[in-house]
Image (cartoon, rainbow, N blue to C red):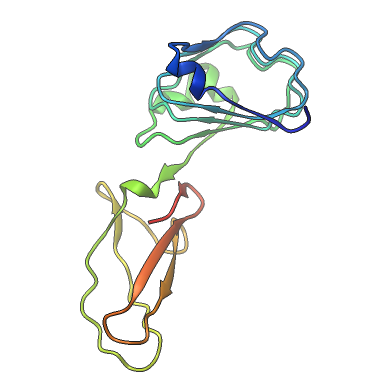
Length: 171
């Protein structure tokens, strides 16, 4: 079908950890593939001829083995996105260096520092946030956006951060 999206998660639950040779051969309707943690290998020609495949999302910290001809005759704009907490540097070397690989970090690991008490002024208050993932301090407007609600009256304010660029999710 046009616009197919393949989720490999159900296969890894059954102990399958690789995509075999020619598994998705000429599946031109395939546009996106999501690979969960525990996946280990893309075999030769796994996605040969998948001309509309534009996105492969991988949740594994260490990149799976990949055959250099895995995506032959496919889409030259194919992009890999890694959602692991700490993607290994090897995503940028060897066979992987031929692909567009970006890392997408989840905000579910983020910690928002306590906000100092504010004095109600009758106007919406939007105090600066300190948001960290591990030791890294995130930057508002670059790594996340903040949406404040109920922030006029004392004791009712809430803030939700949403990931942008290399960050995803909300908190």
